[in-house]
Amino acid sequence: MADDRVLVITGASTGIGAATARAAAAEGFSLVLAARSKDKLDVTEWQDNERLIQAALDRFGRVDVVFANAGFGAARGWLKETPEHWRDMVLTNVLGAAYTLRAAIPAVTETKGHLLVTGSVAGRRVLPGSLYSCTKWAVTAMGEAVRADLNDTGVRVTVVEPGMVDTPFFDNGAGPGALQPEDIARAVMYAVSQPPHVDVNEILIRPTAQPA
Ligand code: NJP
Image 1 (spheres, rainbow, N blue to C red):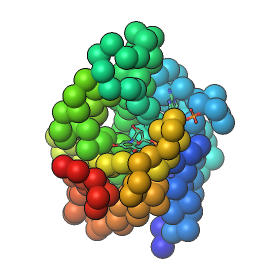
Image 2: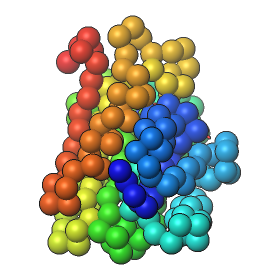
Image 3: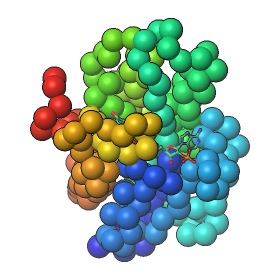
């Protein structure tokens, strides 16, 4: 049981974030959930991230786990998407994740808590023509950089790296054999349920059928 532990999730309206919220609720976590559409929280705005953590502290008095999960993709091909789409994606996937982690660090240091961030298999291998892949390489590096920065604080840092998951991330649906969001939620719960001396640094999860 999670007792009185408090979990904050960005990108919680659908997909992986929503499934993780359901899994964590079943384990007894208190939840603070955010997404653009529901709470008007935009992770690219620093003040929104501060507001999110403050809301959790005001409501529950502590923050134990923060899952920086908000993000979106773009079509592959350097000429495919508009420059504006690229800008929003880089700001959300990279700066937004960095802002969420930054806003969370004082509170999770207090509880010797846990930071998680959603990377991608695309942050472990380069997808041709994919700036999305480049943003997720930045997230892979971010996980390592923050973990090293917080060494000896008792705070753990996990990068969750999904392959193809059937969520609204895909405008036209994921391909056959995709993972379900609940598959990723189980991985998140595995990481957060380890004893304090175990830091699951990264979890790369692909569908059995996804090509290498
Ligand atoms: O997608 P989706 P996933 N500020 O669309 C929110 C990564 N990933 O669960 O727009 C605040 O269901 C958005 O909120 P709203 C992926 O890169 C996925 O698949 O209001 N929130 C929604 O809650 C991403 O990092 C796959 O509805 C913002 C959520 O983000 C993470 O998994 C593979 C925001 C997106 O939920 C979750 O994506 C992979 C902003 N500026 C990595 N912008 C996959 N699905 O196959 C977006 O390797 N959101």
